[in-house]
Image 1 (cartoon, rainbow, N blue to C red):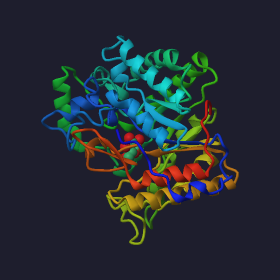
Image 2: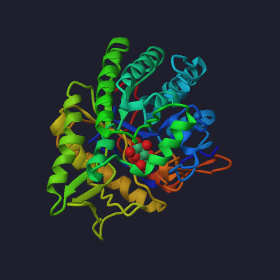
Image 3: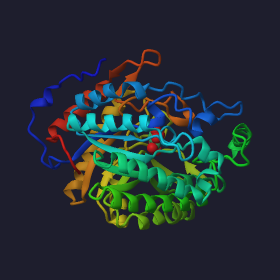
Length: 427
Ligand code: BGC
């Protein structure tokens, strides 16, 4: 294993006092994107259909189900005190009502290993994927899902609550409504054939995976599921901080786009800000700036820092998102994801330095930003786009699974070191 990250000259520099010693410095991953062979999940079904809209199946991904010790050693080698990863519901409850003690035990060992290394495990309870049985029963469009989710959450919070550093209930439940508003219809109408085939393949009359249904029904189910999870956490693991995470791109109106822009705020943000006012924190996930014209997104300005897909990823999007979220939600903020899709690691370095600079400005303004968790620890399975997009601080060889730090890993390590990060045992 090659987790070593080179020291850089600036290791000797004095500590930057804008960040408290218990500021969370971390990296994030998600189970389906790194564990591999998640065959009880709804996405696994979709990835293997004839009519699939996935560029390729997830397959072994980074084989983290077998290599998680190495992953935690990589987090440690970066000098970080936080690792955000997700629990895979489909592994934990592969059949309705049947929980896998062995899968829960692996997550328990992961949490314990983080604790031993002085790393706070931040556990996401739902990161897009669900068990295939849930999708075959109508998925997130059906109100019953909230009860199923509650049963799963109660189980894992009972089992892992004593080791968890924080819980993120749901990942980006606002992203679907955002897409719906922008497209004026279901997020991915081109999925109809894929969903029809999944429905037939699973012997059901409706197959609904996250991102593929009526976004408003899904939004309401997610808000109810979040509230249910918060109640469970407060009862079963009182004292473990919890909140949800939101996709918060910096969306600006171009001429003619004012109405659409207003609709995005009122339908894909305001209901979520309203719902989190009593939470312990809000997870903020900004990646890019998007200009909304009358008919959809307008092209990015020529001179902007761009990601591999040509989106404007100027580094001040992080401060715009922090200010907006804090103004409307009024709870402490954790950046639970932020990063850049690029094969140009020098751009990742520019992006990291700039983003941390804007974070510093927000803290100096007095906004309670409690942590920065970078997406992602390593290159991984980027959903429909497959393995093309690269977000990692480490690259991963697709056959040997060897992880190799990029130059940006050393830069992140240096930034964190300068900030005076210390191991933390609680948020
Ligand atoms: C998601 C991640 C995804 C990342 C980069 C976030 O919205 O939570 O799962 O990989 O964006 O696209």
